[in-house]
Length: 200
Image (cartoon, rainbow, N blue to C red; front, side, top):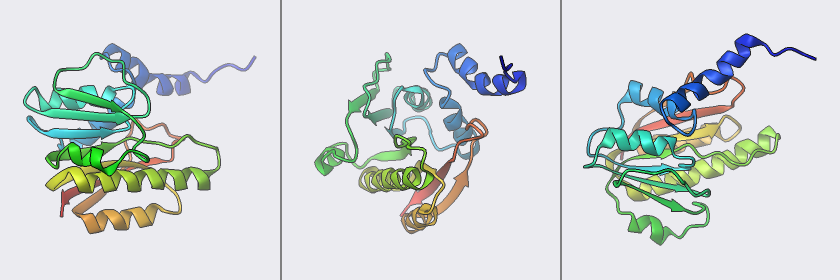
């Protein structure tokens, strides 16, 4: 029987153990924590839209940062079953098929749009990156609808053939942009975060 590499096991489990200790449902919260520590995107009283919010770690963290005077809205294919603060609302649905009128009904007062969405992977890097790009473009379109001028956008993308195309879309929509790879992302992951600052 092959023995597990203790060092590798510790690396894989560290963030999961920490998330459990801090009562977050998933280790993904540390990616957002790293982004927040560096860029300070979420402030007290902010309105935040979280696309791909299941299982709710980003919702909880954003809600804590915005405080009761803020508002956090989440959307995901999977229903979020966590007990959430009163200033958090969650909708279940597919952003690729939801009507534009729904997003317009949310209002255009959001300071930040977050997208940690990822496609169901096939193992084919070309297909997976193309599907990731489709989700990113959909998230960017939503950001155009709901963000205030000067608002920010954080979007996960799988690095692939369409990466430069998406960067160009961000450049045309925001005054600044940056690329960020969290330390808490798994080493084997192709994910990277594009951050748009200052919506035009």
